[in-house]
Picture 1 (cartoon, rainbow, N blue to C red):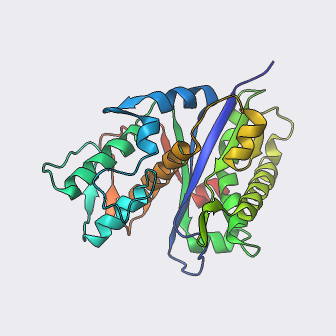
Picture 2: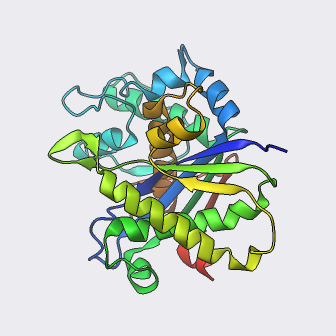
Picture 3: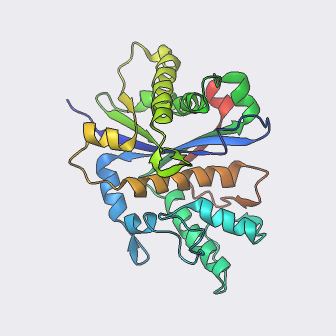
Length: 281
């Protein structure tokens, strides 16, 4: 019997390529759904646009010189920082006013709120400080190796609970080469994927006699060609959704952030945040 095909898109929070500062906030995030659900999710309408349209366009009202080609939460956060914006926000609080700051904040809140409350998207995150990574993970080879191990903590947590015969594909967001930002660093993706698969396997030794979902990890385009080449999923849109997941993690769990999100009414039911040590123990 063939099970369901699931896709987890991932992104990181914090500067994983700089592990020198012991108190730096780090994290990884996965947004997970069945391939069939991903197709319908991108077609959902939010306002006057589909999710795919929102995620493949920059946030409105951002100055063009700082806006990426696609939806990037970091663009808005950098703009807020330049304007000395700070505060503790809820995603359902709409700012009154028509200034660019108010519009950007409201647009961003709507988009983040969509992900935070979506019933068909499972959002899993783990986080902690650089010091924990240095003390508990093998980061000597390169940061991508340590990052893969951290993704592996999340995968090892959930993989046994998929149905027998299911397949879980993991597509971490690639970093960009600063010399050629349109080309991902394939070597880092390969190192991350290898580390993730190996670390997940070793972490699941207690389940070795139990059937569970199959697992594969690679760049999105490689997974698409191998597993769902007949399915039309927009890679840029999925990466933007993964970046929103990482932003929800950082903005809600990083106690030193200038902007903090909180969920007083507990509406983020499909989001789970775990400290590194909670998954490692």
